[in-house]
Amino acid sequence: MNHSPQNPDPLQGETDARPWFCVRAQPKHEHIAAAHLRQSLAIDVFLPKIRFKRLTRTGTAWVTEALFLNYFFARFDLATSLRRVKHARGVESVVHFGSYWPEIPEPVMMELRATVGDKELRVISETFNPGDPVVIADGALHGLQALVSKVMPGKQRVAVLLDFLGRQTTVELADNQLLAASVPYRI
Figure (spheres, rainbow, N blue to C red):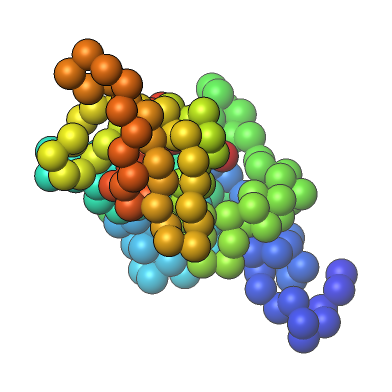
């Protein structure tokens, strides 16, 4: 094994031979279960999250969610720690199929971590291109759908084409007033 000081992090798989398992958390308790396993049981945990803009009644709001809703990953010795993990606060179960507890391969975990980043958070920022369908999330035109006609990145402005009062109209809006018309996809 490589024990170089450049990469001492056990999540990278360089210093820990224990396997990774998928843990199912109670609904919307991923962060509680992961924190409990980390702090109380000293178990390595990887909880990938995404941050994105969501349309609300009052406009757009940034939200952070688990990448895999109700699931996260924990590295532990199955024979000695399974019972403690299963009964930890916020944990519903450890994923298994009968008496088979599948291990998550180390290369998969390394690739997932590289994709999400060291802070376990991936920010999904919206960039608009001409022709993209959008929803106006703020202001007097809140809730209307439109098509991007021109992007002005230096001004953080976007010109959109929308049907308003029976005619097509071009309106220039701040890019933070728009959301992609489709629900953001998970990576």
